[in-house]
Amino acid sequence: MSSPLVFLKACALLLALALVPLAVFGFCCMVTWQGMLLSAAFGLLAISPLLYWIGDERGSMLQMRLGKVFFLVACVGAAVACRQAPDAHTPETARIHSRFSDGGWHYNRYSIGSLLPEIDQLNLGYAVAVAFDPFFTRQQRSDLAAMTDIMYAEIGADADFTAVGSALPSIYRELCIKEFRDGHYFHYIPTSVDRTKPTTALVFLHGSGGNFKAYAWLLSKIADELGITVIAPSFGMGNWEKPGGYEAITRAISDADKHAAIDPDQIHLMGLSNGGKGICLAESTAGPKFRSLIFLSAVFHSRVRPAELAARWLPRRVLILSGGSDDRVPWEYVSGYAEKLKAGGLDVTSHRFDGEDHFLFFRQRAAVLELVAGWIAAESSARLPASH
Image 1 (tube, rainbow, N blue to C red):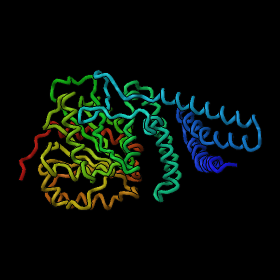
Image 2 (cartoon, helix red, strand yellow; image 1 turned 135 degrees about the vertical axis):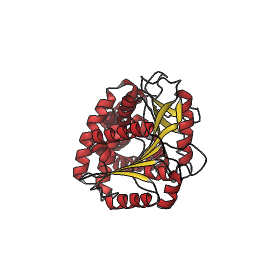
Image 3 (cartoon, one colour; image 1 turned 30 degrees about the horizontal axis):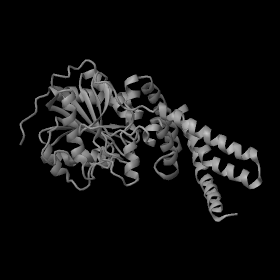
Image 4 (cartoon, rainbow, N blue to C red; image 1 turned 180 degrees about the vertical axis):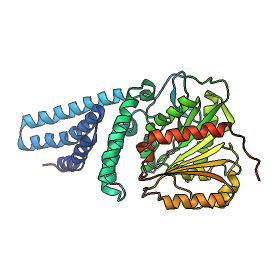
């Protein structure tokens, strides 16, 4: 047997041993037919060369043909899945848009983050988190999977949200140590809003794991109720302290204003989990002065002192929402930081959700949305006290 053939057969064996278990694991985590199809195609693509070479070794034409059939079926399955992937283009009259703050278009329809439905990526992430995250329990996985499956079923029934694609490709680029700062953001504009008249805007900074479409979906309820727009910039895995985090926020606001006029005095900034770090870094350079600040299950930036933040934010007000049983961001940490902000003269309103963990936004979405909507409505109409 020639050495090139030995090498090819060895590669086929290693490929199958490495990728087939991953394909089976992925298939078991999928909830959509597109996700199942991609996983199956991935597995067949991995095993087909091995099956062909085994047939060749044994002189079995049946096995060799079966290897070829598996390969063709895998290619057809992958092609079907690719055709189902949205290109993220939505008409300007749509309610939700994927935009890029530089005015260009950088959406890759055929990256794994775009091809694999977002709900499948979430369920895959839950399974991995159970294995590697000591704070993530099987019960949390079960609860979150049930909640997000329902939520994404609702999202899937909305043509605009289905067409807008996913922001998750950027997380894979960051994980692969590639450039992820492409200026992407979700922009939600209710049908009731006159896009030519300056309107209140809510800017939302996502947490670790990426800018899930479910966040924009939830916040669209507030936007529809109050007649405001939502701007949700994407920043890879949500490490807002990395270079370019603040610019991602300000550039998204500037570009969104070109599509639906924004009242510069009525921009509210909200951060979830690691998005709290983004809030702490906001206004550190020339840019918009946010009307109010909303921390949700938030992490505060360790290198920015509360007294410094209080001095910078006066006389604006702050809303803090967090779970009483959050093991990632303990209430003692949150309330202690809030007290330091108050000591700096800042007006802070805190709300503790007893018994709730870090996934408060999903678990208590109705209550959270009601509190945030009430806060924005009150702060938008309130007269700010004079700064000290």
